[in-house]
Image 1 (cartoon, rainbow, N blue to C red):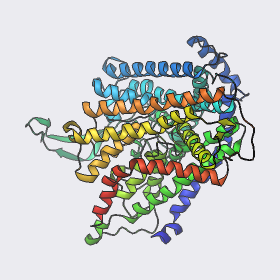
Image 2: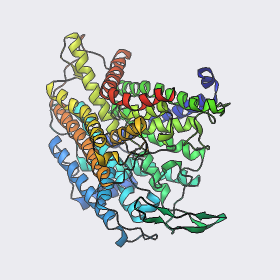
Image 3: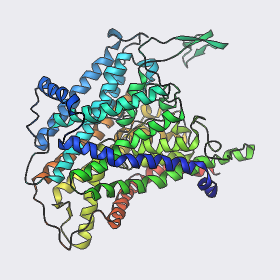
Image 4: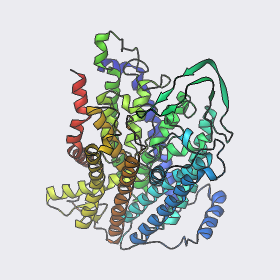
Length: 596
């Protein structure tokens, strides 16, 4: 199997993906650094007046920078306003325009969950978009949050970078300027380009109502009753099908670029209207990691040491690539339970054969696993295959990537500021090993930075595991399990891990649209977002006040292969030790059950 894998076109597909991705890192990363450093841009003549007008309307003073406390307050105020705005749209969508299908209002618990999810860049969905959301809710509610929630994460990262780059000051930038410039000069231009590309491939973009198409062959639908005998579906003779359309291309572009992930349709990018061709699939996969990877180079430019950015990017890639290969290996290996049934799971290449359950034949195994790995390494959460249908160890790969707290590339901004907290911890541990005061980029790393970094990396696994335990011990939590045993436990563990890490993807097989799960996951999402951001901004403020110390013979270089190895070891060790007991009860147990 291993020899077959390395001689197949699957390896070529992976190589092309990474070649294109890494080729974009330097030019895009350098451009984003210019945006945040206020350097002249080609788009200044077009967007400069718009930028100044937005500041005037908002009453923001662009020239006034903020302390980390004021920066945090502005971020919380903006996020709270976004939550209220989206919550009200969802609660009253039946009375608002652009609702040609006359969809009803969302229930309070679902509106709370959805609003919390989209303002935090999580985009967890307990609903089917094409059967729940009006066009107004989609483009004025969800798509707007896809832009601004992504911009918040990038703004927080830039504030942390300024804290590392500056000295003897308590100012880390202006939140309103960072959010506006992120949207105007980065997210909007990229989203426009991607919308045109996706539209050229057939991704739908329209405000027309859903048309009906005549079925080639009529279908008879049987009556369905629930446990109480109530008829939930009447018997019918179906002769036509309603085709769900809508302004999808524009939402899909930013959902991928902003590592949001919320699909216009219930099955996300497995839907042919959302992802019709292999070309659209490639560009959507590329968009998932494009900005997170390029931000590493932005970081290097802004701290005046590009080697630091490359070191962090290399560490991320060293963790990601082996896990990607593991996922492809197990998915290509198929299910041993089929062997006694004489079902042929072999293939001449990685585009067919193996475990094809839950995957689209137009994408195949390799592209499905690349997507599943990228979407969970980043806090994207979109899918082009159903993770619940992966083999136990194939499904363990995306779950394991989630459990690194979304720092392997991660979400736009949030991934890198999460990884930088691991960098500080690694520097601190290395300093203790050699008996020196830890330093990073000339800044002494002391007890305050360690306390804040510890909170940032421990709060997400804590809330994920506590939420999983509560769901498994309560009747309301167990009522949502559609699969018994290890698989059912994996579904709950995945849901709370995804929510805590602001990923948004689901293992499926869990009835999550209930008051219990909507509320529990919504609270988990909010804690996982803001209990990380606040400590990160506190670190930024603390570092900005410090003076730099000169490099000496005892200074630990933080761009060398040795430090990269230390960093990789720290990230892996924390992830493994934190979740190992829970993983043993879920995907690992299911894997050994499969081998019986």
